Length: 276
View 1 (cartoon, rainbow, N blue to C red):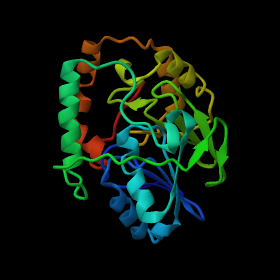
View 2: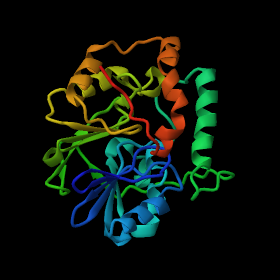
View 3: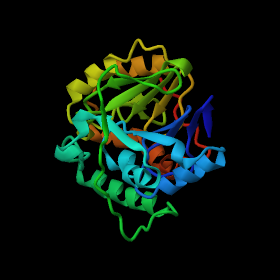
View 4: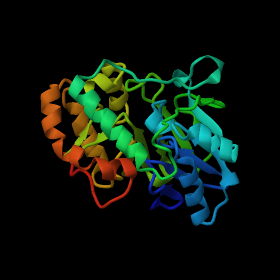
C-alpha cells in the first residue's frame, strides 16, 4: 500500500507495520514477526524493485513483533540491520525479552493467545515452531542523526517504551514514524500500557519533545496510518496523565481487541481512531 510518494506499507505481514522507503536503495522500517521476510521480498518484487536493493533494516525498538523478521530478511538480502545502541547486548546482538513490569494474568493470557493466532495466520511461518533468531546489529544510530533516504530520515531517540526506542522523521513528506511510543487506539492516541514501558517518566519526556514537529502523517507501530490532525492529537495525548487504571484501559480498548486480526495482519477495512 502506497502511503506517500516512495513510501509503502507492506501488506499481509503480521506484528508491526512494515514500511518501505524507496530511494536509490531501499530501507525497511521494522519487519514485524518472524516469517515476514519472504512477504517483504515478494512485495518489493511486486512494485518492480529487486530484493538486493534492500540495503538497510531500521528497527524502532527490539521487541520481536517489530524485529522478529530482521535476521531472516538480512539472510535473504544482505541488508544491514540498524538500531539504537540502547537496544544492543554484547557482541552486537539485539536485546530480547520485554520491558517494564509484569502485566496482570488476564492480559498475559489474552496477549499470548492473540500472538499465537497472529503468527499462525502468516502463511510463511510454521506456527508449530515459533523461533526467534538472534538478531545481529550491523549499524547503530544516535539522536538527531540523519540517514540518506528520501531527502533525509532523522533519528529521534525517544526512550521510555524501551531504552533505545527511536522515532523517525521524514521531513520531505512530513511523516513521523512513532514505533510503539504511541498507540493508535480506537478512539484516540494513547501511550503504551503502563506496565509495557521501561520508564514512564522518560517516555513522557520523549513524547513531549515531539510536540512541535511539523508532521502531517503518523505511522504507529500498529494500526492504520494517521492522516487527520495528527499533531493536535499527539499534543492532546501528552496533556493527559499516564496513570489510567488497568480496568479502565480494558473497557476503553474493548473495540480494539475485537479488531485485533485486522491490526496485526495489516489488512482489512478498519480505519482506526477518530482520536481526540
